[in-house]
Structure formats: structure tokens, C-alpha cells
Image (cartoon, rainbow, N blue to C red; front, side, top):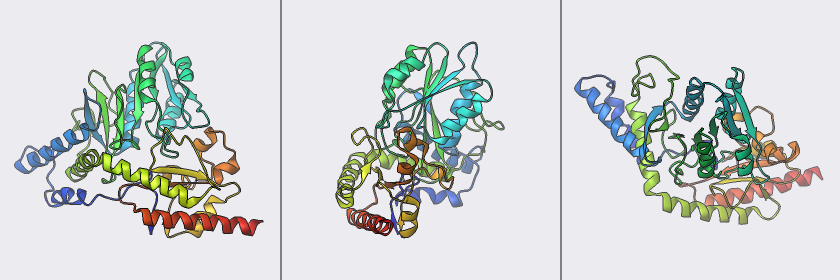
Length: 370
């Protein structure tokens, strides 16, 4: 299997496994006062510091079950405090479902939600942000790197607009965390481990100092009194190690991904168009389309190559990607698009071989339809 679905999840880094394994045997509850419990708590404290190194300065890291929980907590925790006229959430039509569905849920409970369009390159227009954000705005939610098309949003500029109006800014940084700086400006930032070669089911919400957030999960208040539930030392240690590796290897990883991007585009040939900006983009995400292609059939024809139609969270829905439709693509163009995701452990040889096979299969499919 050639694995090209890095936006859905990444392979576990070899260095992460040994960091996690001791906590299978050291099974103590990190919230217990005995020696084993204190050892587990110490490991969590170390990992918290490692994850915080990839976040902006001046805040605290709170561990969650993943980025979906972190996003829900950020939006709903702020909404619980909404008073007076500050009951508006401004977001972007291409956000992850965790943001859009949370906003829809809050909309049903009386908050106003403004969903901004994007330009044809997938990037939000800052003038549209300025027009939507005013004294009624509670929070502006804009992601750093889009999970379907890889475009990088102007997060720092959006945060400045939000703050000028007295609003807060939430950044879903899942796809960019550890790979690039999270810009200064956001008041809340979400991330997860399994997108940076760590384990699944562990994420983080970074909250700027001075920001108050209502709990989403109630109980023992184990996570600094703000989130209840027993933390897993094994998963947290894995997250910390993955974050440390991401920072140490950032330059090397970025150069590798740049080479892969160039090689993939050359191997695919000129018949494919890139969806979204090719400049303001994380290069490990190559979302492409070929006119008249049946992308779902292409995936079925190439079962030993793991790639996708778009977000893994929306796979199987049968609906065209909301991200691609937001770019102005037709339903047919959206259904003719595939996403190739690659990174640290992808070799250029396997990527080139996969792209040539994808191109040949697409040509064969269109030849039969002619």
C-alpha cells in the first residue's frame, strides 16, 4: 500500500512508540496522589510543555480527546458566556465540520452565525471579514490550513480585525500545527496528535491567558479544573514526543514536502488542475481535479494506493465537498477531484509511481467513456 492520505491521519513516528510503551505497564491514574500516580502526572507535565512550545506564547495547553472536542469546547464554552449584544459568530464557509456543525448547533440556540465566502483560491477576503465583524461579534473562527485543499488563511490579520472590534479569535490549527508557526493573535488554538505522527484520541486546546471558558465536560475537573476525565499518560506522552519531533524536523520536513509536491505535479502531467491557491498553501496537500473524471471510481480502481476525495470526516456522505463548492466548482468538478496527502515518511519514488498510476487510470477511464 502506498499511503497518500496524510490529511486524514499520519503514520506513527518511530520515536513516538517507545515514549508511549512504558505507560502500558505503568497504568496508574495520573490524578492519584501515590508514587505511580505522581510519576504519570510528571510525564503529562513534560508533554504539556512540549506541546506548548509549538503554540503561541502567553497561554495554557489543556488536553482533550481530540481537536473536535477542543473546537466544540471553545465555541460552546464561549457561547455560554455570551451576554448583551455579543451573540454573533463569524466563520468561513470552508471550515472543518467541527466548526460548522458547532456553529449550526449554536445558531439553533439563538446565536447569530455569519459564514463568509472564500475567493476562487480558497482564501477569505479580509474586507469581508471587516464588514462582518463588529461590536456584536463574540468570536471569529478561522482555520490555519484547510484540511481539504491545504490553503493557508491570513490568521494573524483576522485576529487583528476581531480584536479591534472587541471579539475573540479561534484558530483550528490542526493541519498546520508543528509544521509552521501558529501566528500570534488567536485567543484559542486547537490541535491534535495524529496529524503530526502521534497517536489518535488526544488533542489540545490552547487558551490565551486571561480568557475564561466554561467547561464542556463536567465531573472531577481533572484537567486544571476546566475539563473532567482521566487523562491517558500514554497518549499524552505520545503527543508531546510528536510535537517535539515536529519542531526539531520542521525545516527538514518542509524541504522534503516541497520536493514531493514538485515531483507529484510533474508525474501527474498537465491534464490536472490544482484546487485552491498554489502559493498560500501547505505543500503536503495536493487537491487536484481532471475534467470528466469519476474520482470515486478512480479510488476503487487503485485500491493499493490510499488517497481520498476530501475530508475523511465527510466520506461516504455522497455529497460534493462543501470546500470545493465554496471555491465555485460545480458538482461535477467537485466529484472529479481527489486529494493526495504526503509528508515525512513518503518517499519520492513511491509518490511518483502512485501519481503515474493515478494518471494512467484516469486516462483509461476517460478513454472508455469516449
